Amino acid sequence: PTPQPTVIIPESGVWVKVHYEGNYYGRVGTSGDMKIVNASGEQFYQLPIVEGIVEATIQKEDGSGRELAIEVYQNGELIARSAKATPFATVDLRTEVRKG
Image 1 (tube, rainbow, N blue to C red):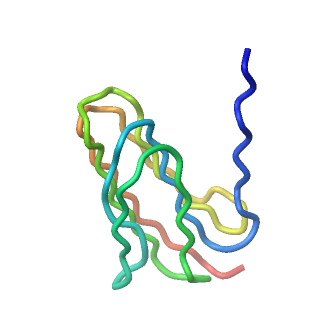
Image 2: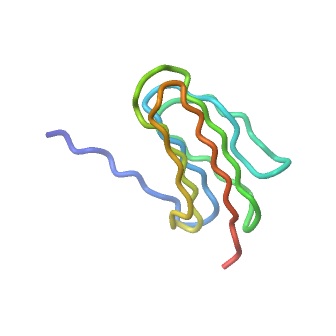
């Protein structure tokens, strides 16, 4: 068996991870500062905040049954996750990041 690459979660800061084997598009960021994303595979997006509301809305561009997942990490810890596997699914995630 081929070993799978190990994903390193950044140890500091606030990061949004989007994972989908196909193409996806949407928005990632904070209220009033949303970045448009259009990618595939596993991507990390760093947010320049230490506290506040993190938002992400990502849509699959195909009709597959593969899972589209959004995760939010703060200082290396998973603090929120949302995922769907339905065709052309849209995943919305909104969570609060707090100092400390």
